[in-house]
Amino acid sequence: MKVKTMIKEKLENWAERAIALYNEIGKEKNLSFYTQSPLNKLVDNQKVEVMIIGINPGSEGDYESMLSDKAWTSRDGKIDKMPAGHLLKGNYNWDKSKNCTSWDIHIKWPYFQGLMRYFSRIGESNILLDETRFVLTNMTFLNTKNKKDLNNDILPRTISHTIDLIKIIKPKMIVFLDGGEAFGYLNNLEKIEFQDLRSKYTIKKVKSSSIHVGSLCGIPCYGIRHPAHAAEEEFLHISTFLKLVHSCEINDLPTCDEINRQCYEAVKFVEKAKTLTKAIQPRVSETGAITWIYQHEVLVNELSTNRNSNTGDFQKTVELGKKNIAIVLTPNENMYDLTVFWRNIDNSNDLEKLLESANIEFRPYTGNPNRHYVTSFDFGDDETIKETVTKTVQTLKDAIVNYITH
Picture 1: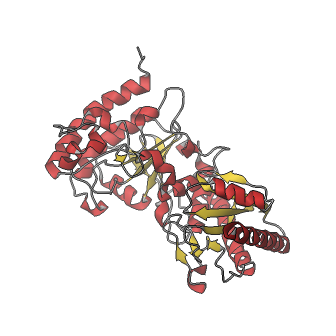
Picture 2: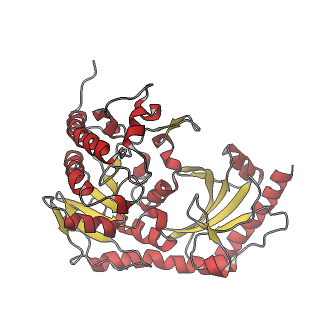
Picture 3: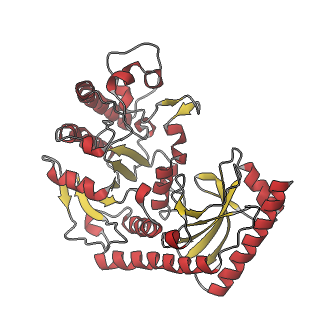
């Protein structure tokens, strides 16, 4: 017989309380509902390091369809109401085309890859690779098409269960996506233990993005830009900020001056990367053997680039059918990473074979099997960087042409 852990028992009791209200509102408004990461993966001996909270799922769906959808209920025929376990399983909707649940492929979600970039500077292993170290959820689980459809009673009626979940999990920190909007909601809600500290911690904006600081249930909470809308500077700004405040109690945060100084130091290298990228832009051959992805928004108009819907990167695209290859130059901490990225392939081994054929050493890029590091170098000598990148690009171009045409 399995012995229930303390966290498991608390979560089961929470789900029993919450499901009654969600079934009531789901039926009343005809809205489906679900959480995101599976709560049944949490364990007693592993402290949750971060709880990431969006506004609501936003993919639309109605309650009546959910009750009769085998993808949710795992059974034929319609059920009367969703069981409590539904709130513990996360986004387990069965995807017939991929033969797995939605959460099974969350690592490939573009916005989740953006989240991984936000947390890439904390520790040796990304927090978001371990489902016992993070929780991804929403302020309300009701699944409206747009946030604006959350009328004046849905969030106030359901937020108490999200607060209860926070109190059970007790994460080290809470991160709200669409931070300004989330803080606006929190300030307007009654009977919650929220303290808005934005007047005390004024973090300088990067582009149009602000970072908000507060306390919820005595836990430090931060409002940040949703990664789906972040530019390169914002990724560097936010990842540097999260590294600085990770594991800090609310009374032990670095000063605003220190936060702003370190964030500026990180972001300023984007400008240098833009200059370098312009200087080492490879010529694209008529065979269309290579795509160069630019991570830098300043190049959008100058080079007629567009945003890649899968990665969020900015790119100048030369299509190779299903064999679309890119080389990416990205500032990372105190150095640049040069990676090669092969989109739209079914077998990541093809990329490894390509790099091996060019005698290029590589290591896998965390979270994306179709992307590999090929070299890194310090921010130092511009001429050395240009020479290294240009040589690597030419080697890769020759290898790509040879690999694809043979």
